[in-house]
Image 1 (cartoon, rainbow, N blue to C red):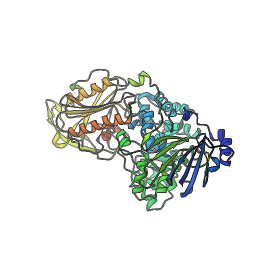
Image 2: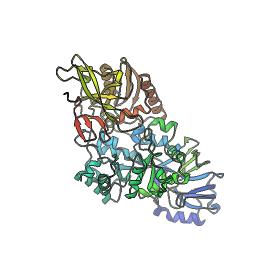
Image 3: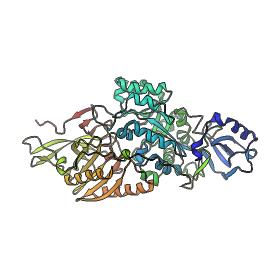
Length: 602
């Protein structure tokens, strides 16, 4: 495979020199394009790019001296030549696809470099899962750099994961060829409070000369934020407003602004550049989480760049934020992120810088996509059997497992309720007065309160944590279950009927994970995710079609929320306020403590 043999710049420098000087023919010349130079932020009309051994050799006004008999020539015909797009922070598992199928989905959209944090699989399969993701990533015809996950569990003491990541694991991973740094340091209270384990993971990364990813999910920009910055995280994608972005870049961190399937944080922060006039080199665009439907129908990093431009950003600055800024941040400025000599020849041809149609994609000097269709193979790893058998329920679940018993003698209770907020990761800590029937507390459709359960799936304990959730608008007897449950990835079941909740949970046990929706005892939709209960190795179009059927089934059950599935999958994310559910109980993330389901009466 051509892409497996990419040699380093020093290994091929003699060849690049010979091509640029005209002594040796290029493998490929792109002729007559408008070179978008992200180093100088200028557009150079009628320029050529000569490529050899997967790297740019000559970038200048006339490459005719580089063309030999066997040189492939692509006529740019006045189109813009822009660097391949880089996603500075993302989780492949969120697309419900393996790295190979994710790559196949995003290459036609012009993404040629990804910085991926496989912390979802780390929670399920530990260091071995990270290694499997890393190994498949290195097989791809584009650049997928892996960050070693830092936080499994993301909130120690508040959840139990399939595996725990240790500082020793981090130090080992730093020696792997495709590891670029440490994944987002989500345990920000740990860093702020000087937690020895978290600081040891950061130290192991820094000593290896690699980049530490940040995740400071708090609006507090006082001493706690400064303490976090002092701990070593080099970037942060959890900002939601202009002040957040400004605070990060002032501290020498990169502000990563995300547009994913459910994240809309570019528009509110990019004003730091477009209105306040801050130096844009401190800002990076990313997706964080994109599900398969978004990838198939709307795009990937091309969608983010278009959005930034629509928010008033100069197109060349928006492109810098998705190319050179990202490369510089990870210490790869002389490897990727620009069209310049020695760099990997990752080039997109587009006829318009604002609408950004991705017409021709070249990665490492090879055409990988044309007019929206992929033209190369994305090789699959042979995933081992135990990575496909990760849903361990310990028993067949029954309706009784989802009963919520009322306090002795109560005929009404005031229960804490997780309140879903449309298009936002944070939830609200609500409360509702609920009726008791035969000693059991019931949800209340009139208040839009239904049940939520977290079913333990890593160790087969048979454990079920029950609570209440509001905001989905479900009507009639139904249940929805998912083994994608950030970050510990147990199983989340939400429903109005305990019988349907049991059916849905057992169904996922049977198929090895995924998402299912039952109504009145019948399955309406199923998305099989056999790899770690998180991913499918089927093509993105197939997964997207099943996911779309799942969205339609949610709507058929009364749900009107935008991106409701993303909300479902985040209900156990015990690092984002206010109220979450874990295998240990209900978690108040404002205080990082377990909290009782019922409020004390009297």
